[in-house]
Image (cartoon, rainbow, N blue to C red; front, side, top):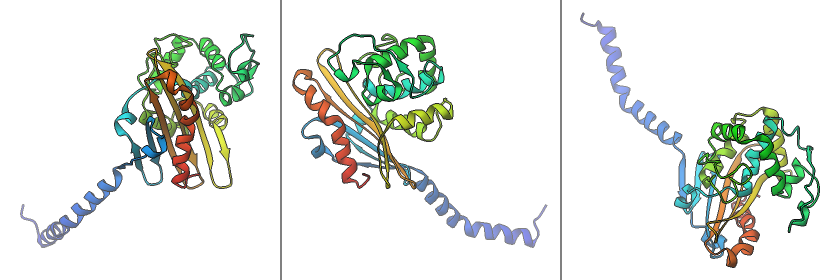
Length: 278
């Protein structure tokens, strides 16, 4: 059937707009792709071997120092206290941030650990024994199910129910840490809104009229002579959120442990301040 004049005219109009439409589609596609920027931040690390990644939610853009390291998985150490808290709440092994686990009376080198702790004080003081006991109460079966549900790093908890995150089998990259935090912020993890609200609140490190900083440090040795320090978190304002993960690694634990313990958090804070986020 031969098209009438109206159909021919319409086809010609459509054809005349094709280049414009293609340009619009190309522009829209480019806009939807996250911007990726590699930044030399070595001066902030003072000679230490490190990596830093930042995701700006407002501009859908990434900034990385040492991108290959940002993609490399390492033991999460005490940053795993974030999912451990969520899992403990979701399984009802702990009721809320005030749930106390009695101290086992074992004297440890960190004196702040040598007392009863609730969830809030345990994460603030990074109390390892509290979270080891919590993990034992959750049990390997449920722990494995949740770690796999959230897709946390390599999801390998075979290193022992109270050790797998401490220089053992579980590993996660800085990029994956940021992805996990983005999902926590967006209520996009397989936990109740209540559990996620509680954990977001206990992660609060600083709150001002301008921003809220939430985060968690981590530190552990592995392979007998290596150490890694972490600081992960996000800065939130009413208009935007920036998610970050920083790690510092050394293959000489005896030489660098004290420095990494001190610098793991400060490095990231210096970068965030210089970017005007704090």
